[in-house]
Image (cartoon, rainbow, N blue to C red; front, top):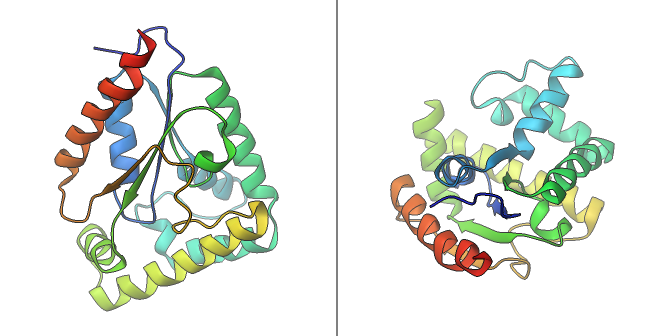
Length: 196
């Protein structure tokens, strides 16, 4: 089953290394929807500004943290990307991988993937080949700065306010395949079934 011509909007959110990008990409493929990543759009903007943002794990690098700091002092970067994501949501038939869209978009089925700081650090360790201690430090710093950006820019509490979400999934002990299977089931039953 696919979304076809329906105006489907799905937002997937969660803190760094929770699996949101993988889940969003796979849902888009499964239901033949466009996948749009807020993180990818921000990286493309960083490239235009002269950052070397192509490598996997760039967000957690020293340079990625500098861009995060720049964003903290100038909300124009995030507002520009969020305006583009809202435009995509308005067109429909899209899976948005974004921290902000669950709060900013009036439409869509909104999913939060909940994973503890320790487990996210373990995943970062496996992904980037760094020590658990370094991964914990990176995760805590990135979470703190990102939360500050969105609190200051939009007034919402990332990772603390679950009110916009239709589904909060505890993905702590789930593999990416299990997360995908659960989300596919939910999308079929709660999103696509309602639009038949």
